[in-house]
Amino acid sequence: MRITLAIGVLGTLVLAGCGGSRTDVSTRGPYVASATGPISRACLVGGRDRANPVLCGCIQAVADVRLSGREQRRGARFFSDPHSAQETRQSDRPRDEAFWDEWTGFADAAARTCS
Image: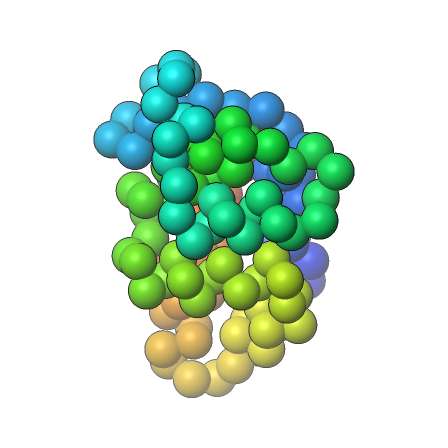
């Protein structure tokens, strides 16, 4: 059920509009378009109709605050391979469980910030 929620949150993010910056994701402004990274790139090529540089930049800005570079690269794979998200969520390995907690925290923050 949590995978459905997390994927749903990410899907909602792609359908929403937003603003933000790397240091203060609650600030709306021109900084978002320049927020690039693995999450932003995955968002833009993920095949969602409403994905755009502003939205994907906002999601990336939240990722920059909430996730390490390694976590961002790992999570970016979920955009093209949702099954890997399911495997991570269901894993009993402590490392996967810790990552999933970080990822869902990021998804919740991005949903609040970028909608």
